[in-house]
Image (cartoon, rainbow, N blue to C red; front, side, top):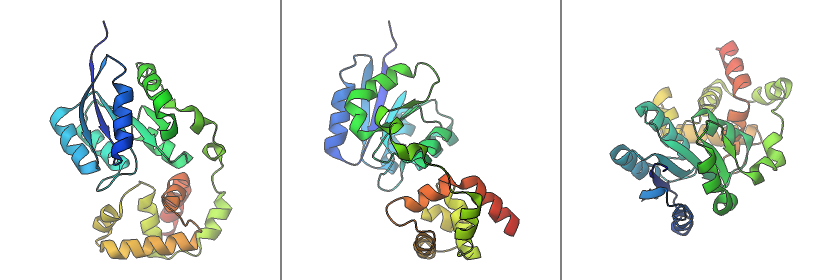
Length: 224
């Protein structure tokens, strides 16, 4: 007899969250113990309940999915995290995997693949949903060092510090705290970086930073 696994679902869209819960309830070995609509509430309930499984969106109010995963790692909780996201970029998949996620599933695949992912993760393998695996963006190459060097030549030293911290997927508040600057200043740097690096649009600057993390960090160290 399989162990009954406790599950928490976190997503800021009530209808989608309800659909995920209905999907999970099809498996009698899963027990839904909580749900949340933002990252801070998610963390509070995780601390209290410590479920076996967390099914979570990346883009949420107050704290995003990356912040929640970092918090889980800091607590050393044994929680399997399943990311449901509308973002298929390789940078997000790689960062989620580095932070210990068990799976990265496109939201469009949730109804057909979430239960399969949970079932397959009795092993240690990382599960990637089919539509993400088929997406050409997932396999798009990193910017070459020369291309990146040319792009970064437009960036000021202060902006370079912000970009380096973005490679760790830190929020503007966390970057501000580390650099002892205001959040407004950090946000202004991010706008300028997005313009100079042609990374306009939701999460494009974060994607560029994570995807080219090694080259950015190396370049920052050599110029510091």
